[in-house]
Structures are given as C-alpha cells and as structure tokens.
Amino acid sequence: MPIPKFPLLFHEETVPHVTGPSAKPVENAARKRGIPWTESLGIQVKSNAGMERALLDIHGWFIEVTSDSVAALGSVLSSFQYYRHAQPTPAPAIRVRILHHPGPPGEAVFGLRDATPCFDSKTDDVQRLLARMNLRLRYFLDGDREWADLDPHGMAVVNPAAGLACVILPEKTDPHPWAAGYLFSMALSAVFRERGRFFMHAAGACLGGRGIVIPGSSGSGKTTLCVALVKSGFGFLGDDRLLLEEHEGESRIRAFWEPVNVTEATRGFFPEIPKPDTGSISSRGKSSFRIDQVYPGCLADSCEPEVMLFSRIVTEGGNRLIPLSGTQALVRLLPHSLAVLDPETARKQFNALSRLVRRCRCHELEVSQDLESARDVLSELLTGKGP
Image (tube, rainbow, N blue to C red; front, side):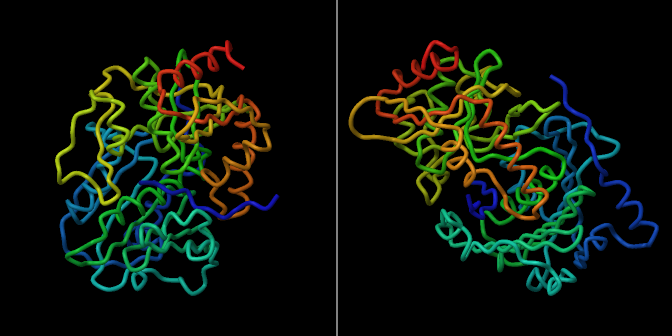
C-alpha cells in the first residue's frame, strides 16, 4: 500500500525520561568555537533587537522559546497557553529561537542547495490543506538538519537530535498571521518525532482513563463530537492535536490542550459557550474559547486508547456506528498523522500508528443532529456495552 506524503498540519502517570541528546551539548560545542548555537544550524541572522523569552512545559519536556519580537512570540504562545511555565529551569531539553531577517529568509541559511527535498505541498499535499490557506510548504533534509520552507513567509531550521531549532521570519509590516506559529509547530513536531512522541491530527476524550481518539480533517465533526462528550462528563484531551507515545510497547495518548476553534453552527449546539467578539472571528468563520472555562475540571492529562472513531456528518437519518477493520482504520488514519520525511523516522511512526490501531476498536460514526444519542452510543462503546 503506497503511503501518501503528508506533513503533520496544524491550525491550525509518569513522564518518561527524555532519551537522546539535549540541546546543551551542541550549544556548548558552539560556544567553544566562539559562535552562537544558531550558527551551528548553518544560520546567520543579524538582529539588533533585544530578546524576549518564555518557557513551556509539555508533559515534562521543558522548551525555551526566545524571539527578537514580542508579536512573533505572542503569536506562537497563543496556541501553547496551557503550557506556559513561570519557574526557571536549569537545562531546557529543547530550545527554539524566532528571529527576523531583513532579506528573504533563505538567504540566512547555508547549504540549501545541497539539501534533499522530500516534500512539496504543490504536488504532495493530497488534501490541499496548504493550498486552501494560500501557502506552499517545502521540506528538506540535510544530514542532521531538517528545514521547512514556507517561502516567502518564513523558514524553520531544526536539528531534531540536539533539540535545537530556529524560525526565521522576513522583516515586513504585514507578516502572515499563521507563519510564526505554523513554523514553530513544524519544528517542535520534528524534535518530538526524534524522541518518540508523534503528533496526530485528531480530537480526543476519555472516561475513567480509557480514551476515544477521533482523527479527521476540518469539517468532519470531530470538534463538535468532542465538545459534546466533554459536556457529558468526559475528560478533554484535545480537539485538533494529540500526542501518541509508547512505553514498553504499549500505546498511550497524551493530551495537547489548545483553545478550541468552533464554527457558529457548532456554537448553536452549546449555548453555554460565550459569544465571540466580532473581531475575533477568523476568515474561515471560526472563533476560539477555553473549554476548561466553560466546563471546569474537564482537562485530562492522558489515557489508554480504547476506541478509534472516524466521524462523518450526515443530514438525514440518525447516528449510525459502522465497524472498521484494522486495515481500513489505518488507511484512514495515515493521511492525518504520518509525516513521510526521513525513512527511519517514518518507519517508527508508521509502526507506532499500526500498534495504536491494533489495540483500538475502530468504527465510523455517521453523526446526525442528535448529539445526545451520539454521546450515549460512544459511552456504551467505551464501557464495553456497545458493539
């Protein structure tokens, strides 16, 4: 079965010890050579601005984010507000710098001509998600470096094994509103993949430590279904991204909390969600809210995945649950979760996704307007009372 090329896209218990090198050895080696660690990535950016700094703590992995722009740092942190860490940490496992360059971002990176291209959204984005955002992404590999080129809006250069990344943005008065956050997420995803945590484009909810994973693209109904489950007492893991990791051969889903983006149609099912300000509605007709402020105590940290569900909105008839074989589920899952970049990492991620599918009961759910009935069906499915 051919695997479609697809980079992980974004809208956009005990924490295991981080294996592999941390950012510190490479940073120290660069310092001994008398150069900034960004230059160890093959980057030269002249910036006279002061540096703003923030710390994130994502399930025990500390990430230092620095930038020469308050606006760029704020754009990135808006999607990571649940993971802000106020206390200093002696040695972050991951360091990311966000800098501006007066010319095209590609001019600041050495070695681009020698890199191996492995993805171009112009030909490889089977779902055309980037095209719908008027963006073109190209991804390259070169030894221990990877970089994502979102020309002309910016570029990210990453050393995944060392946990170092730099996002380079052009100096202009009208930056793309998603560029900084998108490139930061691409860089973070590359480092996480290296260390055995894989982002999935999916929603998730759990009950009693047992979870439902709902992969799907925008418009599939996964957010509406997830919010309905949380309203009925399920724990919230995420509505757009989840983290898959394995411990001693067992799959585990870790939460990735973000503000939930909903359409006006979804808001109509949940009158308790506060109405958005007019200026906060995106061009796609969505606005965000913090789900823990609407349903206090709903945040869940992780779960053992039991059910994988592919939702599909229907306008006629009631809710219908259709069993899927493991092969059918895997074929549907891969376009939402597998980053086909370097072969070795892709193999590890493919195997992790395959093991996840094998341990789950997999179904398609045709979702009607009757969300209460859908919640009952899923509750029975998760507790073993359903099919």
